[in-house]
Amino acid sequence: MIALLGVAVALVAGLCVLAYTLAVYALPFMLGVETARWTYASGSGLIGAGLVGLVAGVAAYGLLLILFTVVRLPILRLALALVFAAPAAIAGYALVDGIARDAVPSHVWRVIFCLIGGGFVGVSALMRLAATGSTIHRGG
Image (tube, rainbow, N blue to C red):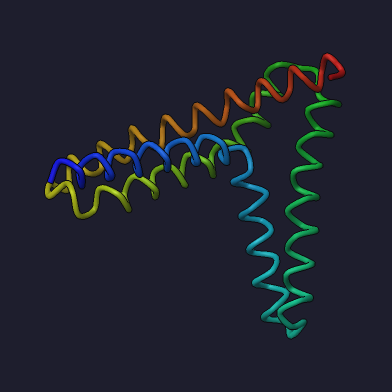
């Protein structure tokens, strides 16, 4: 029983690290997936849809980097970071909900935990975007 609990804690910690690492890429990934779904539904085939989705995701991330380079006003940078961090917060909420669905019987507490988890992932995405923006701004 203790070993199973240890494995569960290690898995949750691993998922949190994964969520933190991938938080910045949530919006480009979602755009890539939706573009691939739309392209596949229009009859392009699996390989064509995958290529179009990959290009759309890379273009969205490239647009983020370009906009962080061009935009100088801090309030506009914050707005841009919030646009990219909002899907990360939603993904964090869904991640905690998936983990806590069977572990937390109370719906109210599950929602509270999900809001806290989504908040942590959203704030971590903002921090990573701020670090990326300052690195780009310095030229490194």
